[in-house]
Image 1 (cartoon, rainbow, N blue to C red):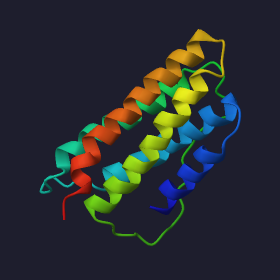
Image 2: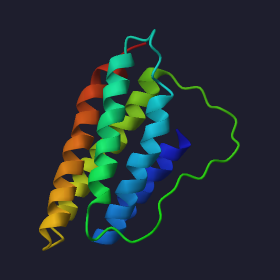
Image 3: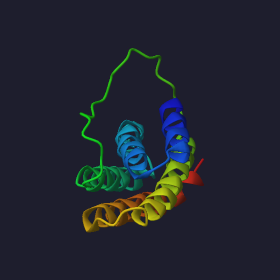
Image 4: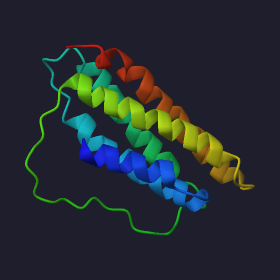
Length: 143
């Protein structure tokens, strides 16, 4: 969950619309492997994690359409790491936390732009982040 913690910190400290959009894009992108790692068909939280993965991908795609997103090629850098095993509840807590920050920052960012495209992208992405929160709330309480 170190990646989620780092993405959350970057999102919290981003200033200005382009930086917030860039941090939000990366946060959604970083959420996807953490969500995918919890998609165990035998788990009671399976459906919540599958649905939240779709919402996170849709949030990322909404940000990608923002006119003020810096023109940087976003890509995932894969490094060899020792796998860290976390429970579904721990993953859900971290993902819900960053999703709440996404909602807050994206709603604030929408007010920073006069561009209707930026406002629409922020609103759409915030909606998808809120869906992740809603979907994973129950998974946070599971053993």
